[in-house]
Image 1 (spheres, rainbow, N blue to C red):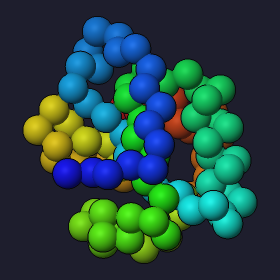
Image 2: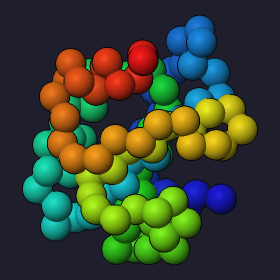
Image 3: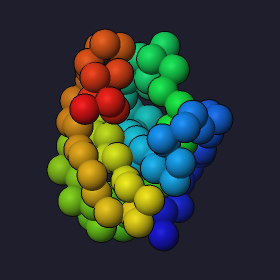
Length: 99
């Protein structure tokens, strides 16, 4: 079970039911701050759970996080569907979600 530091949940659109994104981050991580801003601008309508790797290192280990920022898209059964590492542009984030 994920124990996020904070959770940002946006309303689901059709087709996004039960999927969620885990955003692994750290307070000291500059690229993490940029990714958070880009995610906000991308207006992705899948729930996003934010996990601080310094606070919840056990969750980071569970998901094999080796660097931040990292995004993991979980399907309706909590299986890892996709993984994205590093800061991405708004258009790259939108493309990642829909492909």
